[in-house]
Length: 399
Image (cartoon, rainbow, N blue to C red; front, side, top):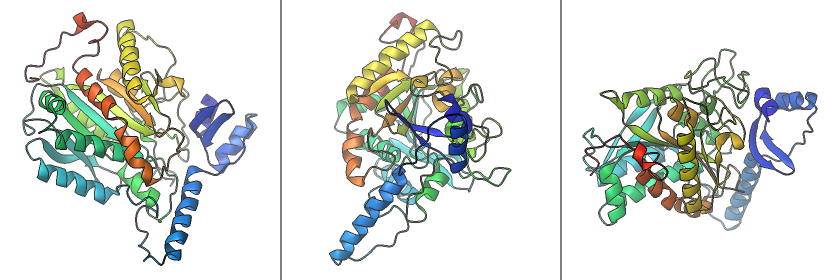
């Protein structure tokens, strides 16, 4: 699989029949030269656009007024565009001002703000409580992940006054959401009225090509294995240096800002992706499980136990991240390797590809409610279920 990554292909699906890969014509040629059998199939975007065309034809046959295709294609309109997502977050803050606050994580390559929503009691105060960061839409075409973030935001805010469990979580944690990290890429993917299967950012590279893979551009083990590409045109391009993409640099700046009086407040991180119905823990850069001092046996045992427990909530497959395919410079390795946050990658929408119909939004996002709530409750200490005697950090405001 490392041959695919180095050549610039992105492994989307693994089965007994082989790999489903997003690759350019040039990358496919490289793979053939490496004695790999390559067969072209319709991309998820092509299939989604065909479905959208069918929806348009059906609407015309019914005499319905055609809407202007300025955002998501017909049949996918329930997904949130960037502007709709921002409006949703602004409405959340207006409705729940005592527990929700909106700010900017930073600017994208094209100058857009990356919204950052904080949820906590005493939301305007930086309390001594475990902090959690939920990141969505790292990859542009993974639009379902934004819907997942927005759903959990609504569950925490709308449920605060009536759900005792939700209230306890909000009162004892500071939870941050980035519903759309890759704003430029996500916007570009739908700008023409058809899906483009765009994955990367819209950073202008030195050779004139566009895009860095945000999940290969973090600083921990950047270019540290064969899990990324140095080709700027590749889907897994890691950038010329770590944190070159403004979208990943903003994440680094935020993570470092959460060190208060020498103590890292950020204790949890989930990066939501599609597709695969899998929950994964570090490492991505190596298939080794224990790599002292960065990953001890106690830490790996705790990750494995928590990952399996969370996976059972949504009937997901639990595994170390490299078990899907190796990657370097990715988010979960960075947030655990550099900051010791309890970090997981969540892959959703098994069997639906990158463009599930909007009728799938509600069943997909709601099935993960228990997983997220259980995760929030676990983020005060990694060892809670395996070696509670190692839980020595105190949180005086987490009442």
